[in-house]
Image (tube, rainbow, N blue to C red):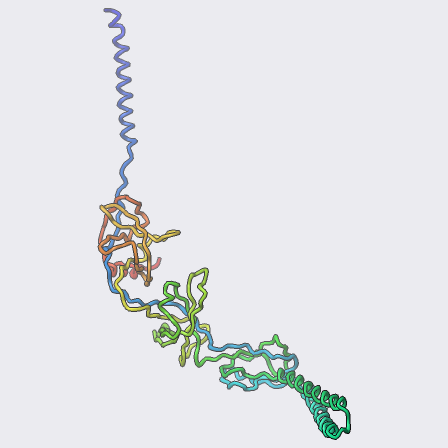
Length: 364
């Protein structure tokens, strides 16, 4: 009995230690449990099909209908220069002459020799008719005539190269040389551009290639401040799609509109009748390497779906596939949403309300 009492204190101490360790373990286990993340607060909109104006807006550049840099074909000193800066000149107008006195003299000399050779050939022809000379003498005289004719033509061609004429009617640019200057074929004298009609080159996405054909009419806005539009006729479409941008290059002709080549214009193309489409704000689209995605609210959780986009407006994007009317689309807080994670919808706004909010946000 005495021995049992002896072990009671030790036994009691061991039980106390076991109890304390068990309590600490339960406490540690309770603290190790992860806390549930609070739902992400988002703003959303309900998808609905609305009328969409199917007008494609593109950027274009103005190109002169005809453009040429005026260079002399021969080297020498300028003896005549008729370059009225910024003035209109008619086709065939003599603009510059390089010193050609030596060629002119050579042509006159060859012409005199040709006249004498032709008279000789005519006399030999008459003698040959009465057997006064043999055939070889007449052939030699005829050959001499042909040789002098070739000399005249050759020298005349060199002479023509010294005279620079306007290849078409147009507006002369700024004069780059002065009379008396020594010029060569690499010397730029001026430029000549035809401006009564101009070319408008613009690009459109390849999916709209079937909506525009040669002969179609587009509207061109040449002055953004006045917002005036003019009609232009599509002349041609580049058959090769740009490998980098996947765009088609289109050329239209704009007539009787004062606009400077090299300028920037906006082009509006009617791609067909108006249609009903689902539009969403641009910031609700999540770009990916392969697909675009939007976040839908399904049962209070986030659901990521792939979508096919269409026409892009200033703040909105058309959804062609992936979203249906009645779906709730997350617009703000998109970057914080996670697949199947809970969402808390703070407000439901319309597409127009989101557009107003974006327009009212001032840059920092």
